Amino acid sequence: MMIRSGYKLLRRCACAVLMLVISLGLTSQRATAQFADSLSSQARISVLTANPGQEVYSLWGHSALRVSDPVQGFDAVFNWGTFDVTQPYFVPRFAFGAMEYELSLEPMTRFMRGYAAQERGVIEQEIALSDQAKQALWALLLENLKPDNRAYAYDFVRDNCSTRILDLLIAVEAIALPESLLEGQQTYRQVIDGYVHQVAWLDLGIDLAFGHPMDRSVAPEDRAFLPLDLMRTLEASASSESGPLVRDERIVLDYSWYPAPPRFDRVQWLFWVVSILILVFTARSIRSNSLNGPESIDRVFLFVLGIMGFILLLMWLATLHWVTGWNADLLWALPTHLIAAIWWKRASWLTTYLRACSLLMAVTLVAQLVWLQSIPPAMTPLVAVLAWRFWVIGRQPVSSGRVMR
Image (cartoon, rainbow, N blue to C red):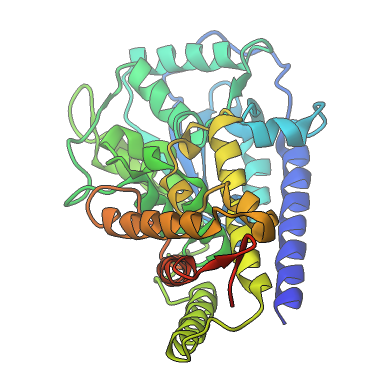
């Protein structure tokens, strides 16, 4: 059943990537036409926000900028969310964090057809701009559209399709940001979790991969890295001249989207069941005064945790992804677990190592309640139970470099 579920998940991800590539291939139009140096007085500039979709790549929604000038017969969408999959070493560069996105231009009608096909709603917010700010923004768009300026180093939090739009509004001094959008503070991790908690394995993977930088509080201007949060930021902002920034807001494509409520998902159930089984097995072993059972089970636990820690360490030290730095999950998923698992029968230091790991895991569990990065909720019971089991095993005598059973 688990293999079948994993296969279905893999197939869905592959289909999602294929749909994304096809979509990008259809919509990324190279802007080669000549444009007027200025807009007419009837021109309108608005922000388009697409609702999150069902596929992984679309879970956070999308932002784009529409410029409509009926005098010049121009109605097109500036889109900072396209990239070229034909570039060499695409996958290695993506994994390394050296991903380049591009600004593309497409007619409004084509943009709408694409989202209608995906059944994703689109909301348009017309921005209240003075003539001076409008012309300044247009000049920046033309400058960004030049071949040498189209590409930019994509950053999920600091530089993406949404932050680029806010940066433009700030650059032309058209926006006065609100002091606060929500009661209380949220962290980057909490903001992102609201979009992915319904996709259990993705939610777990993100929680594991993101390090301490994602546990910082999000300032109002920083929330705009997510499209729906950019839309809310614009709604709460004021124009630099006076009055609200958003002159008019309307639904241009009506497909409703509601965030899925948090739930106790199957992944958490799986880890809870495994944790309870380990707890019962260890308790019975203690009661019988003997930790009977195949040593391969404990070696598998150490091996899996070691592989996980090795990957997290690579994401921190060997990539450009700053969001994966200073990951406290390495305190319980130590890469050295791999050595312990492989050298199990020859490691005279094994019992000392297991006791030290147990204490470190226990300290991590307590510290996350105060200041340390939180352990992913699904993993918390497993970490707690393994800390106890490693302590129990570590107290057993060693004979010929092997833990006695």
